[in-house]
Image (cartoon, one colour):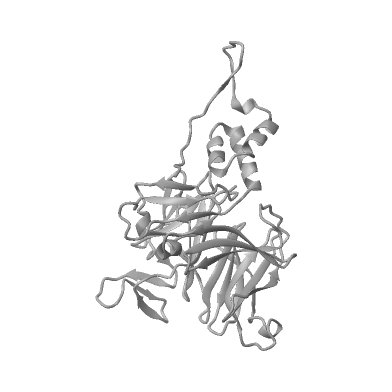
Length: 385
């Protein structure tokens, strides 16, 4: 088990007794790149602390070798390891990194979403915060009940009526737990500007920016519920579904002070007859939005058979953009997570649309079902600038 730490900067002294010293930053760029390309992720993070030149070179190298990591939280009843979490890097076989944070009760918390080194966390009492897993920086977010909009959320301790009361003038419901659906966020590593968004069931989408003391709201049409959201390049893409399977896709531009709706389209699930002429064994198990490296928005359905392990993907292009971005993943591919509850395993797989083949990538054997349920794959090397 390794612990991540930040080393001190070093200086390179010239030979021949010369008292003058040459900075590590004066090494040729090709030599620095050659060194960093041979390092694993943890050592690359340490090398970046040498100087600004090594930091910039490290970022370029990391962008070329992005690989998902797995974060493992302790069981809820684990009092001994309450302040520890573990990180598994598939690129370093049989290695787990342990990270300790005295200010975070990992056993009483859940990781909702990730962005680079940052985690969007919620604890047992529904306190929301952002946490940098490597530097231990923490940003507390507004209380969940500080909703600014039509939907009202109140904590209640009345017996038999749950912990929260939700209402919007037309409906009112008491509930024990809050469903924080499809949470996403963005944060600038240097300025710490951020935007956090999460779906509030059939009620609204809540969002908060740096400096806000409350959660703003985007109201959801009455017959729909928030299903999946993606946030990229100051735009929110979100998918709504009704109980008949009809979907609605909206795009909001967050580049201004107030989010502005720029696109909307709807549709119905695909026809199963083209998958199976009998039409008896296939069903949609999930539907997601994907924003491609060229800025296109895709609606992806995952179909599965009821009695076999067969899967099928259906992809529909619903929006095109002129934005061009970079990335470290294979094009024309779907990356997805699979879990085996019987064996307590979690795995990242790839489906290539060009070869029509599935490729298992990274796998981890969890010690228990509870550890499996609280595990989450994330990208610590995601480009945050």
